[in-house]
Length: 162
Image 1 (tube, rainbow, N blue to C red):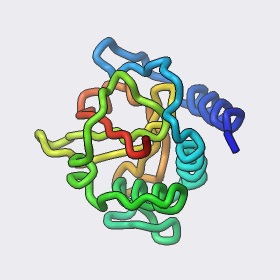
Image 2 (cartoon, one colour):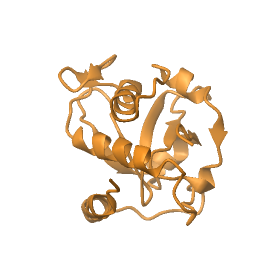
Image 3 (cartoon, rainbow, N blue to C red):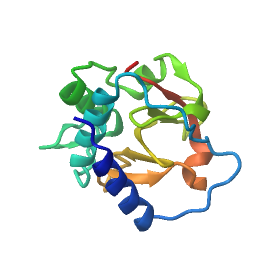
């Protein structure tokens, strides 16, 4: 089952709730058609949105106890697509790289906040937004990839399902 209506509603709500002017250095979203495994990506996005508001917990891997960024990604892909992913951000960054100008919903977005090592990750949900478990005291949320805060640390993307 495709979820275009849900994704459009979710994207509209996110856009209305958060606004930030994009800059020319941010990754651009391609108008390319969805990846061949669109159903699996729909399932990933739907499941990820169902976890909005779950508390952040370092090392967390479940909605009952909370998530850190890689625990959230690992849980969502395992539960919705049956895919086992590396449990750490360094493991996620070792996956084959994708061009950042062709981001599609379900792609992983990676950030290097302290030097060159990737230490944060999220799931791209479309329209320049990504879903992630941010940090201690936070909750799973959607942020604007084009915001200067995230743009400064963006280090690449990975496509998990092809």
